[in-house]
Length: 162
Image (cartoon, rainbow, N blue to C red; front, side, top):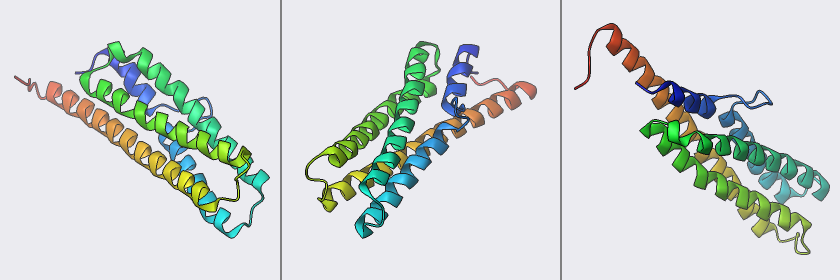
């Protein structure tokens, strides 16, 4: 069974942030925003300023997730093996997501912001990474919940793994 200290890691993986938005929902909102703005940008319906506001909101979400990952890293020594794997796998995805978000912001602030192809590529990469990250976190949380249920049932039935 995971240690009580490991339970805090599990809570961090599945917890709600200060905004009361679970991490996976926050990541999916990044995905939706990036995908939506990629499509809208190509039609030039929305002003550059509107894009900048939306991208800054995405950046805020990425930064919030970064703080949660920092808390996970701080609790890593207390984590069970599966939780350590989750922490180790989430970090590079979040780093990439942050990099693509910064690239989008740099593009919006740059001289060459009429380069639709590059902007669309950054948005698509942001959407892809956020979608993959949300799925991965969800799978780790599901694994942890299932593992806990099996351990409780095993204890109730007095089945002890060898």
